Length: 370
Image 1 (cartoon, rainbow, N blue to C red):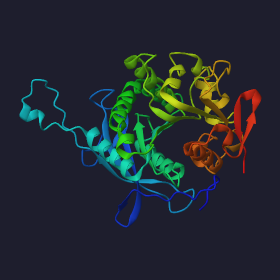
Image 2 (tube, rainbow, N blue to C red; image 1 turned 135 degrees about the vertical axis):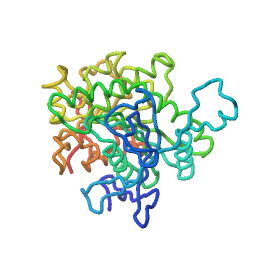
Image 3 (cartoon, one colour; image 1 turned 180 degrees about the horizontal axis):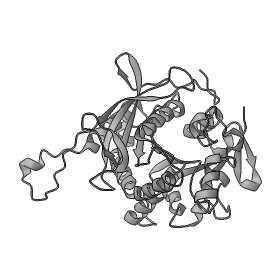
Image 4 (cartoon, one colour; image 1 turned 90 degrees about the vertical axis):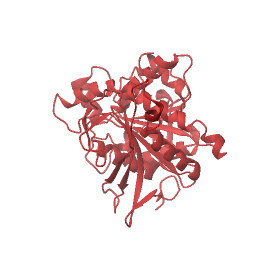
């Protein structure tokens, strides 16, 4: 099936489970495992070992048989771990130490080298279960990857409730997103350590991208602040080729303030803000939970000091989807937006992406419906 950007619909699958082709998604999470090591079940609370304690693994996700169907998690593998906390432990005991991150990132790194793949990190939003996150990661892997460039997806799952209890769930999720910033920073630091030498090993250009959706942008803000705390504002590592801020449930003054998103420009080659004034979920967020306009509804509050590497993409005319999602899930469910992202990942400059119109007064591109 052809996509709007002229390429074929990606049909890449990374593994099989029986006779059914599956999509592999890698993950890190600071959620509490309510199951077992062999049959993990990550819930809505933080790990009992602390806010920054991480477990790593991979999942096999079955794609839908028809367009618009649901992706379904079929198998979750939790990487075994045996961390020796005692610094005085004998060498014989230390030799038994095992880090789950090492197994997962070795696998991810090998796949990127063998397939010459890019990697994409997904930070999810409000009211997502652990399974929701894996399924959305699989969807992005399928719809975002290019014919000429496979894509590996790594999701960071913070302990969102996975439900919408009025006046309770939103604020609880927001607190959990904020508290997860340091854990997210740890996961990204470990990931970058493993991927640092890929370009030299593979003799090709391979990039790391990031997508933050909805409240995931608020979580990302606190991860950014944790990175600043470790490296200093003037010595930030260039982590990402592209950062996509999708329907951001974040204050629209965030690029103006050092304690919000101002440092993000130092971490990426390019930042893309996709916003829609008719996003119903962000309207509720603004009117009932936050006093400030939302970045994902209005775009940045002011354009005067906005870094040139920040591209604004107005999705108001292409925010509606076939599902009842209050025009908040267009980043993965609206074909025109998916096609736009694919062209960015292909490396096209902002003014060469098809089906965009330039809106000078907004310093933004508007995606045309097709």
